[in-house]
Image 1: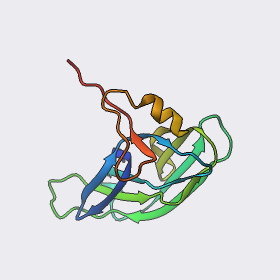
Image 2: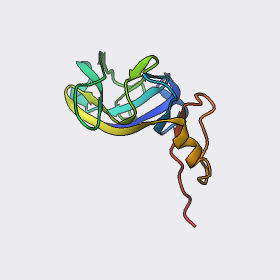
Image 3: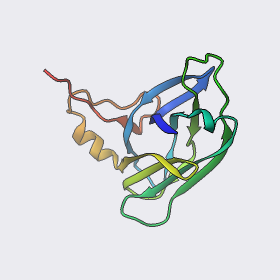
Image 4: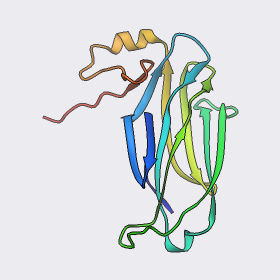
Amino acid sequence: MKPDTVLLADAGHVRDGLIYVIGGGIEQMYTASLPAIVQATIIARVLLEEEELDKEHTLQLAVRPEAGGDPVAVMQGKFVAKQPANKSAPPAFVTAIKLDGMALPDYGRYILAFAVDDDLMKEFHIVLAKPEALRRRSTDAGAKTSPANPTIRPKARRRKS
C-alpha cells in the first residue's frame, strides 16, 4: 500500500473513482477569532497490492500542534477496496474526508497525519495565522484568497523563468 495523492482542499468529492477538487493544496489558513472552524476536505488516493483487496482496512487522520501535545482532532473509518472493473488499472482506494467543523484552538503550525492500518501514508503541515499576515503577504506574486473559503489561501507558487 502506498499513497498516490493526499492533499487538503477547499472542497472535493469522489464519484466513480474520479477525484473532483476545488482549491487544492492548502498550506495556510487565516482567521480573526479562535477557535478556527475549518471548512476543508482531505482528498486521498491510496494504491493497493492484490493481496490487500477484499480486506477491511482502517483509515486514520490525526491533527496535532507541531509544537507537541495532544491531537486536536482524530478521525477513523473503515474501508474495503475491491478489484477495479478495468483490470489494467492499479487497485486503489479513493476518498474525500470532510473536515467541516473541526476546530483549531490556537494560531501556529499543525501537522495532519494520514494513515492506513497504522502505516503513515502522508504527513503535511498547515499554518493558522491572523488575517494581518494575509494583508502583509497580499503583494506576493500570485497571492489570492480562496474564493470558496476566504479564510483559506493556497500557498503561492513561483514560476520558473
